[in-house]
Image (cartoon, rainbow, N blue to C red; front, side):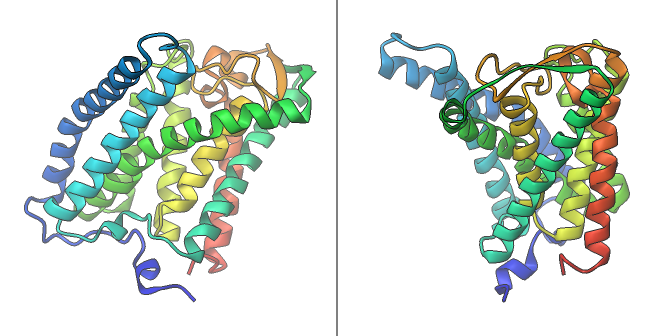
Length: 301
């Protein structure tokens, strides 16, 4: 049986904060980039100082930078929620319990399933060719190193966008406009990634659609856990498993399947990866239909 905290979930916040919801969201947006930069730079500097610069490069710096961004997201979202919004931290949608665990696991299944559909679509279209498959032991070792990085990077995006900003804007604007606003912002935040402008229109559409999917998951489950699980598994299967670019980022030789992608950019997304291609849009559409069907059947009640 769900606890009282679990039942509250990520419900729309009340309007008894120190500022109106839109203003709270605006202040959050103004503070977030600076704090994320400061925390990331600080952790990178601390790591390099402790390491005396001997191996201060590559994966170690990626972990330090991602951890800094995640730390900033945690401090800002929970701090604003508690002291500016005057709402319990659990209302951000990260309460603990068996229901939360089941939603997270279901989210992992959604992310893995949708990326598997992307892989199948591109393979069936002749745009993706498998060059090599790594041994299972090598897969497990590489995944153990990369899963924490992917998880903290996903949390650093989900908590500010779907956790804090969406929860405030839906009070002032209602669910549809809050969904559109935060999803477009999600798309725009990815335009600095490598390859984002190679197929600019589809990049914005694809990332925005993914953001809308995550918002819908928050609305229907009243929790952030399903969206977070989906985000983590989506990136994990896209990059380390299937060897495709993750929003322009390449995982090199540490992938389970080495994929060679060609064919039309409108389908595959080119160097940015599936999020800028029709293959991703089709997978997200199928996932949205399944998610809605589960919601209609009362699975998330």
